[in-house]
Length: 379
Image 1 (cartoon, rainbow, N blue to C red):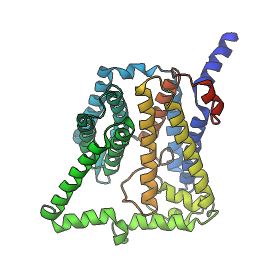
Image 2 (cartoon, rainbow, N blue to C red):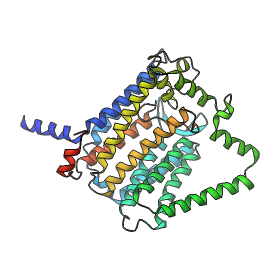
Image 3 (cartoon, rainbow, N blue to C red):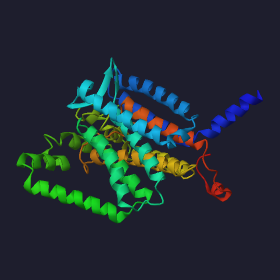
């Protein structure tokens, strides 16, 4: 009996329950929104099983000791494994909506680009954690950028520009928090801007420029490329203060809003739950990010700290880009809302990331007693 109590005590102490609850609440909000649109609840039923499996994986990973991820051979193996999957997509991947991004096995599908994002976080955490003394050297911007660029190209060629943008955001965010020279980073960005300007003036054809303009400003063509973004804006605005109620979102339920289960689930949620629901949504997201950061700052080494920061950047990038395209201020790129959007690969990846963070929590540095007194959220 004492042994069981000891085990249970360790189990409850190892998990950040506020972090876990935030992820579950976001998942429930997404499934409630999906369930209100379809008579047979197809998306809702599938997502329930995805959530159950993802939570199971989360708890299993929470008991792993992830210090082995600090080994160069392990990290290189993960990176090469992901590259192999991305390369294999071009041979046997399934094309859906113009993108060859999935492996399909019967009714199951797997999107390697989602796991590539997590692999990049691990790789960059390893790379920057070993070079913190000489981090100001521009070589580290170029080398880390090369790793990210390889993944970016493989994903962009599918084409899956949304995931490619997230990969870029992860690299940029981790470069900024790792202590690399901002002057060198600005120099690299300036070279990219100049190269794009040269291509625009002397290389791109008129039809190519038109496509880029429509991508950047989809609302310029609301009957064509901007239709989805325009309908999303209508859905968000029509929710007003209290929303129309679950199941009464006309833009989504009447199929005016495409891809309401994935890319535009925030717009569908806002229509049904209104401004009040959106505020609650942002509060839950804020708790999620805060708890990730809170756990990361007590990481046992720089690797664990950088992993937590990279995970937070991953979630923030998804949130900002998706909401931006839902309210018409960013291009439509097919980026999902963490935990809310329909899809197994992205939800599994998100819970794997949190599970690894919980595993690292098991051997984290203990906070100073004064810091513990000031800690007002979580255990």
